[in-house]
Image 1 (cartoon, one colour):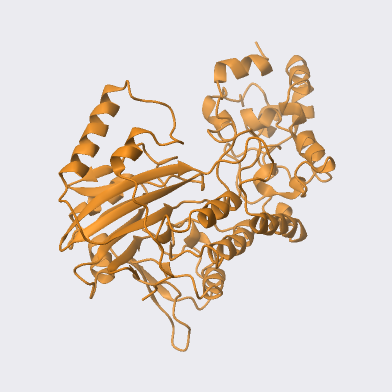
Image 2 (cartoon, rainbow, N blue to C red; image 1 turned 90 degrees about the horizontal axis):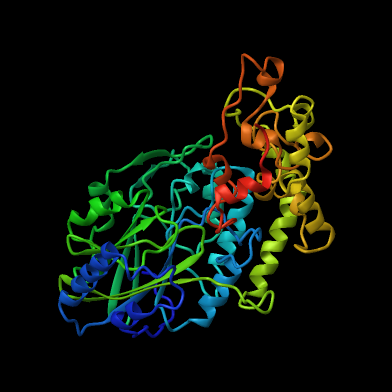
Length: 484
């Protein structure tokens, strides 16, 4: 049993929270469907049996996707580990247990490995140590030997994957995840289970034999020997429908947590056959407090409180933990030292099978379009990274960081795409082929190989809800308009 030091619970009633959470998104009170959903959620909570037994408050997060901090491309961005750590320490006593839903990283690259070390160090911080950490399908894309080594290196963190069964070879160590995690406080017990809904996709030599259990079998495994009075929590990765389907499991879950389906926590919880379902959002931008009370075989959702991790609007670095900031800065420099930039270049095929030729080649025929591009911010996108580095705006080598490079160059990560400013100087900036696709075939025979029209999906790969929250395609097109 894993039981941290006692903490008092948050007692704010759900009705008050519903009346005016300070950090909610747009006001949807005039939307009839929204009003109906809110009324249904409130009625479900109100009709649940009154409880006098112990309550437990879980602070939930999930699907971080390797976002150690906001990228800084837009003002007012929310999220970041430093803000999270600051908030967790300041709120001690307002929650009982910290639960991380998983998908800590975005995939299986060397950059993800470097991120994971920083992430686990922060989650293991004794000032606000996480009580349970689920593994998600993105985490399982890492080399299984590397992943196991990381998890073994943090023995005080409890890693859970109820549907992942690992059978190690003889004389090999056990796989470092658990089918469940038990937590306890003030007479209230909680059992945490999680469905990763995946197995390692990059098994190392000598790796265990991995098997993925179906949800019912995984839940049965996780609930083996559970105290009937325990609060039963199930984290489920993937689309929310996968979590909804688990409401009928036996024994009945007391809380379903859908990980990785919705950008931010919904205004209200959802109820599926009487089981509350919540979603903590993605990219580490929000945290979600859920208070549950349990008596016998019945439970009640007492509180549902999502909140955004906002920074200070007046003082840079305020509302952030300085130690975590320092760890992230050290990570950024390590990424350069490991030359992750070149290791992540030239890995993937281009979408259209052609090769990148650079904007100079494009402008040799499309002269007017080339001039429009040269005058645009797209044409100077690489220079903005260099400028940030030179002026110490970011205080770290941003031109070496793959996540930043991808939206400031042509074809980074793809074969024939950007590698470095020295090796591929004509692929600096957001060039013609960033929007129109690799152009070697078109350049060789423009009549036979025509490039398709650009759609908004191309734009929103970089201009998404976080980097460009006010992105308006028709208005932005006027700024770069060219062609016929």
